Length: 257
Length: 205
Image 1 (cartoon, chains in turn red, purple):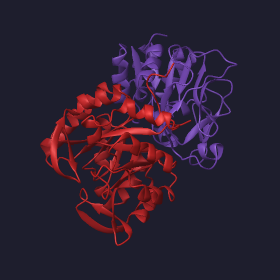
Image 2: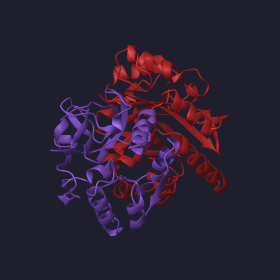
Image 3: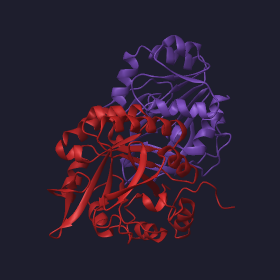
Image 4: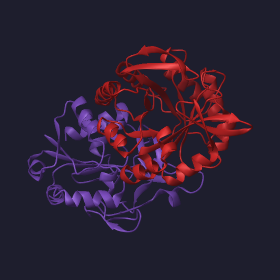
């Protein structure tokens, strides 16, 4: 049986991992290469690197970090941030990324999704969506959650999948950083309309929130979080034990005797 | 030296790094002569079947690859590189493969039925068919170990070479083995420790 995936997310700026609360007030956490290797050894199923650098120099540092990580860590790597065209897919795939996550770039030009899916396959294209409740509907926000696009999140995700997105990362701005659990309502709305893997993001504060997520919504394939892993509030091995005890299929590195 | 065939598709970076990690020398190559010199050959691949088949043909490496494989040089096909070894694929039309193995590449969706997402992405188990000996590349791994899959098509009608299946609503071909020809639908270079054990076993064949 396929397992539920646990995915630490590393926001990288100028080659270092940072994580903000509600996308603001960034603080330096650690070295991406060290964190990636640590997570891989304790059972993370996949890693996401978001490049939040704006400068060319920062982008070069990011590429170096990516190459170094991909040479030492042998689990899937997804890269996002600054992906505005097929040439950006090419740039990060060459450095060892397996999947590329596109967010604002696809909002500006949805054609990127189709072009990249045709060139690299659907499985390579992850559509990442930052969504927030506005007047009772789920609305897509751009630019790291700062700009209301006016787009309906469910419609946008359906469109993204029809264009070739092979996976969806749904980040709820409403629950992000609050640590009171994933946005089950928003996730359910998305799971009911797509048949590609859905990765839940935003709101995890403890292991129990992951148990709740996968128990309440069997259609969710993976849970993504950042700071709770980086600060050791939730340990991945312990989280997987807890999930397994709750009857949720997970990959454990060392099988119980 | 293990030659990794570079015909313009796939994440060769991780593959090369993972062989280095298990102490095996591997080179990424676009030269037919390097395939002939190599002790083993790896055929990687991601993306669409027809596009990859076309690129392999145009790369000028197909002939050398097939000749070496038929002559008994150990070969490891990975993901789309596995699918290319079969007779044909039904991905967006009917496209001929290399025909080194008997079987046809078919879509997952009708096989697994409703309730299973496509693509099949994530970590899933290895099961070894009881009626066949365990393939040498799996010498150090166990039934139930997890490996990483990303695919929407799978090899069907390949009972002659079936070496492992995984469980996704239906048993799907996870690996095949026939003589010196090995192939995995999953990505050993992305399957953590288990994957490295498989690559190490292939490297020491």
